[in-house]
Amino acid sequence: MQAEDCRRLFGQVEDAARGMGVREIEAIVSFESQALTRFANNGIHQNVAEREAHLSVRPVIEGRTARASTNRLDAESIRRVVEEAVAITRLTAPDPTMPELAGPADYTPVERYFAATARATPEERAQTVAEAIAVVEGAGQTAAGIYSTGESVYALLNSRGVFARHAETMARFSITAMAPGSSGWAKASHCDHRALRPAELARAAAEKAARSANPRELPAGRYTVILEPAAVLDLVGQMFGDFSGTAVRDGRSFLNNRMGSKLFGENVTILDDVGHPQQSGPPFDGEGVPRRALTLVERGVVREIAYSRHAARLAGTQPTGHGYPLPNEAGEAPANIVVAGGGTTVEQMVAACPRGILVTRFWYIREVDPYEKIFTGMTRDGTFLVEDGRIAAGLRNFRFNESLIEMLSRVEALSEAVRASGEEAFDLVAPAMQVGGFRFTEVTRF
Image 1 (spheres, rainbow, N blue to C red):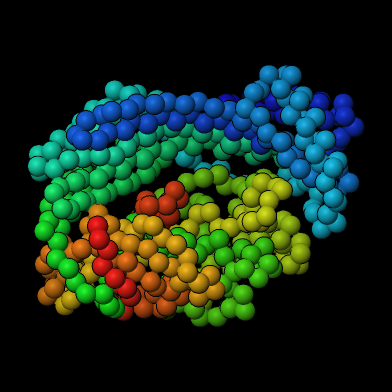
Image 2: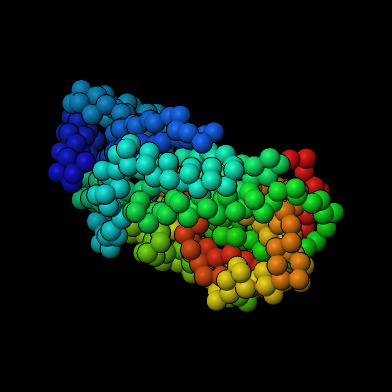
């Protein structure tokens, strides 16, 4: 969907709104084309593709606002969705704190569209999957996973002159290698599918499955752990919804009464940076406000949080460009997390570790204590005993119970930060971490 298509659709939205006596209106226009090849038991069993377009409109009428959406973009459907949004808006209670529509502001475009990814064919994905399967099958194991490619366009326009548009491609490859009594896993995502290296991911998964055969059982307790980047994402990624002006104002953030405090270790620095070369997503938020880079944590000290226009107005500060489309209850959150890395590789962490546990990833993660950020969950797809500087054996999986605040106060070493993909739907840039005294509470049955 090109810029002129977005402008044409918004012209129809504005015309319909004016016909109903409404001058202030915002529209979000989006288009997505996704294709996915799924494989299991060393063979492709599904190939699907989907294309969809959406239009979402939000009028502002005397301090009131509401939203209505449609996936039909003909003139009659546009008129109806505007009519519906206006009717709902007039039924809502006014909010005297709600800001007017945003005005135009310059944002720095980010180049995240690769034509080769957008044009990737089922045959290309099938060939890539076949090569990955061959690696796993050659190790006497069974492969399963997905390979997806797609493109998207997201545009926001309003009657005050805002026009913000972002086009992006994305590819994801995930593979699980299964052997009798063990498994290994690897996953990667990138805006350019040519950067994924699926055969290397398959080799890593197969090696993990082979190394974790006949796993030993280690008693629960506190251990030094080496968390691969995916495991760091799975766990550390759970806390960033709290770095929000709305969450702090509502009293539901673990940062309440802790802003400016040193919560984590000296070696922990976390940024929100939409311009980072390994990041993805648009350089503006759900109201078209440019995203500003944030230093969320600097050498263990909490420095900045995200603010939407609404949250910033109530807090007497400036918006940071991290707001969700209005109306919403969540407010805002950082969207482009970069956990700063260090200069130690995973191999060096293992070589220097007298006794510890190497974790590939976590899953089934649930919050236990929101203020202390205590989470529970389980390891999977490659958990290993490290002894005397080497991987000595695979281990039965563990359940953990750990505070992120305490964990990030005990970081002993960091690798280079990379774009990481894990159990959760989001990605972030994160290093591997060596952490002392990580608490495993029990051995799982699988």
